[in-house]
Amino acid sequence: MSSSAQFPMANSTEALERGLTLAPRFDADGLIPAVAQSATTGEVLMLAWMNGEALALTIETGIAHYWSRSRQSLWKKGETSGQLQHVQELRIDCDQDAVVMKVRVDGDGGCCHVGFTSCFYRAVAGPDGKLLQIAPDPS
Image (cartoon, rainbow, N blue to C red):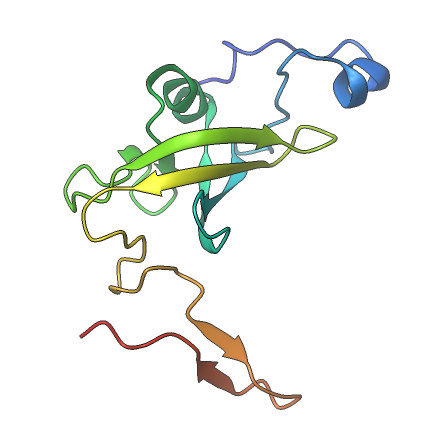
């Protein structure tokens, strides 16, 4: 996994929380959670993970890159599916340990490997934890 060395460390809490320098705080595995949402509708499309290399490539190219924890490799979203995610805006939270991206998706507009537009196509329906599919089945 690539190091997060290309990003500076904040030298104070004030700099981290109020400063204008990107100084992401990666977890012990060198990762930061990244949420992709539709730039058009605001719908949350997916949650994935980025390491320093993925975040740097995303910023540099304007195309979302992630770190696959299962494959232990860099992943350019849409490279094989045609569902490239063009980053319209990238935000980092107050303590710089999570990112949210507003994206425009190529291809069929989907993001989920199961075929749905969003990976969040089910809702918890009640206190028993039963799931309810809330999006039309793509098949």
